[in-house]
Image (tube, rainbow, N blue to C red; front, side, top):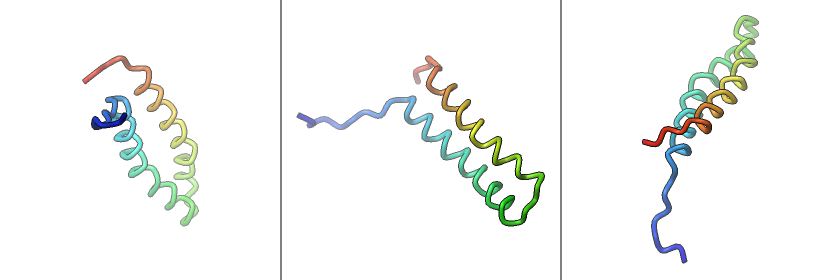
Length: 66
């Protein structure tokens, strides 16, 4: 039944790359702001979910096929 190699969609690839890049940037800022209690960096904890949501929406609503 499943003899062929599965194909991963372009949207899944773009979403995985986006999440990986945002995570590599955002998680260190979040950890540093929690550990060192730098209150200016606490805004990162609010911005991270917003970036994930809008980035995912942009990727999944875009009709571009590569």
